Image 1 (tube, rainbow, N blue to C red):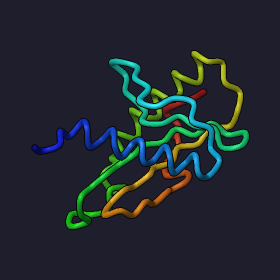
Image 2 (image 1 turned 180 degrees about the horizontal axis):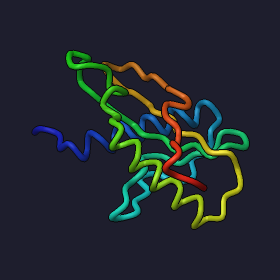
Image 3 (image 1 turned 135 degrees about the horizontal axis):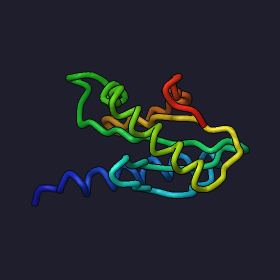
Length: 122
């Protein structure tokens, strides 16, 4: 039976969370949704920094690395959702946006993969 896309996504998001735990990150939330604004795959704490993580999986790199599929549009949604999360939870810590790219049993962790631009303030 063929695996559903959502099942595949959840499996790789859990793989990414386990990867971060091995790096001593504390997982705060997984699959945080703020509809209709957006969602964040993983919210974690790296020492004193709150990290918002987008997880991307691809079977092959034939059309580019998984990280290349984190479009500007997706980045804006993640940033907007994260800033709402920060405001709602009165977070004063530094924040960072990372991408975890998974392809063919390889995990690549890209720290500071993207940043809030001048359109967003927090």
